Length: 222
Image (cartoon, rainbow, N blue to C red; front, top):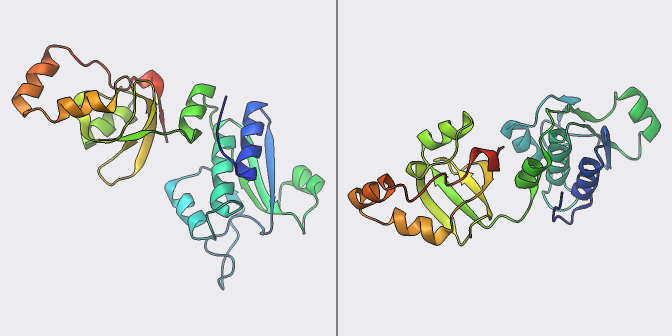
């Protein structure tokens, strides 16, 4: 796998994923992931995260700066490693001994491992080299979430200047990224057809000019 990210937490995650480690311990200046900013009164440590969901990401974004070294970077690191099939622990470097963390696992926040993704899908999900976005309608999104390829009929909008075989993000009607994939056509090709009058576009597509825009085998759902 080849990634491009300069944050130390994420770099450690990429190394852990590359060597197929079973556990990554991220030592921090906080106890772990909290349900709100740890400086706020009543903030509670979250000891266990079964799966990193959008709700968990929102908690991390509210817990401190998202820049290098912030909880956002640590959560991205946890996302990478758990998707690679390993466990992640975020704990306080000053209060906990590393051997105790590994042996007892009762400190900080433990992130449960997920079903291991193939290396290619890990690369698609976490590579920073994304050159464009494709907005899709509800039907296109539902089809993708059920294992189908992206067809032209599901496309609403093209953003960016990507080329064939570039990685693009798929966006739903709420402007949320829900997948990434390797696109089979350039932005110029897709935009040209998207601008055609509906009846002309329908006939053009009926002639079989466009196959899968993104094959399901070249796609990774977030």
